[in-house]
Image 1 (cartoon, one colour):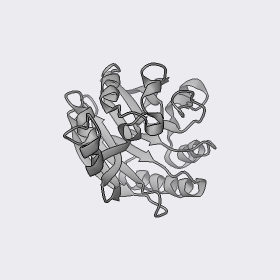
Image 2: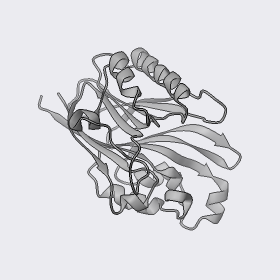
Image 3: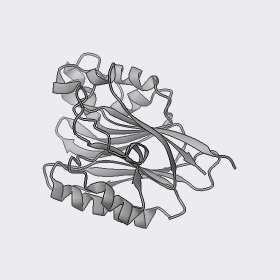
Length: 251
């Protein structure tokens, strides 16, 4: 069997609003995503439903944000509802060109103010003998909470992903202190894609002038080929985060 190439993108879409919530830009995000060849998309801060926005925001889609973005390009998707409130709910989503075999959403909240989850799916990629696992997270702002969450994620990997199966772990890690990569490498055997290919983590926030290194794509059982931050036009005028893009091979 030859190498199988998989292209992935991780993006905190800020609930479809631009930096500072000035404009609703979900349709522009959709158009930007169409310009990049991607097999699997990891999304954070995705609104599954919001009554008030649906009434007041011009251009609000008739379906959930993840369904609107998936459209015809990614026919398979899963959504993890994390934060639930009177007007609606939001969470993480994964869009895939490949069929989803199983999915679950693990509650990794550590305080009542930050409702967080780890969305875990396994997918069937043509040419692979094992399922490809994909985990999408958006971790706490406070370091202590992030440390507990990473231990929960590592426990999930150990319990639910066989060592023979490759995986992605992607999302907004809020890890400006850059402590998480060492833990994931030691406990889960995962390396960060951008760090592996460039020697440093990617600066992705704020999108207009990225300084903080918050967004990551970790891999195990995959061969990193390339990684880049999607910045400049049109990305810098969309979400408050820049998107992170990567290419791997699976043998």
